[in-house]
Image (tube, rainbow, N blue to C red; front, side):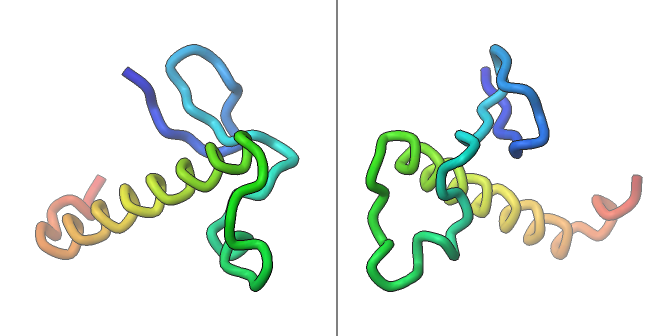
Amino acid sequence: KYYLVDGGYPNIVGLLTPYRGHRYHMSEFNTPGARTPRTPEELFNHRHSSLRNAVERTFGMLKARFPILKMQ
């Protein structure tokens, strides 16, 4: 099992962190002329960002549907 985490976490076994020093945010890939990842690291970061956005949207939908999830 792996946990999808942001760049603030260390890159250790079980945590999938993005590559540092490479494009990561979706807005960086949506600019004209920079749509496609150029290196394997950028491709990984692009897919990492896409998956992370999907997870965050899913949790947002669940919290909207089940308000009890907003409580700690």
